[in-house]
Image 1 (cartoon, rainbow, N blue to C red):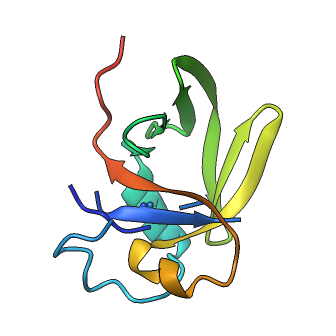
Image 2: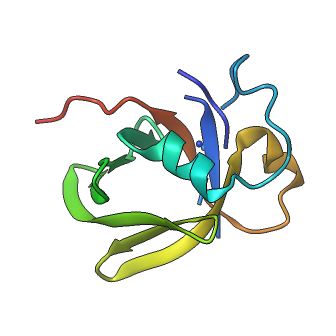
Length: 120
């Protein structure tokens, strides 16, 4: 698992995620759209306890928060990660966790990007 502010952990600003050796080379910059898509497709972004977002390869989004399941869609638009979960929608910058200490924008989420967990 990689950690970057997104196993590699990532940070999503205005949405976010720890750093492994693989993530250590990340610089303090926002990810480009192609990087976001490549890292999020088929993966789960989670705090490993309370919530998780599963990014299907087809653009469907499944969310799990304190035992409650939700659905929606996701996409990458203009180098931002965009969500639409009905009343909750928006587009956010994404960057490696190491950049968190120099963040100038408000962090929305910080978690780990990993293979999706099996849920019932």
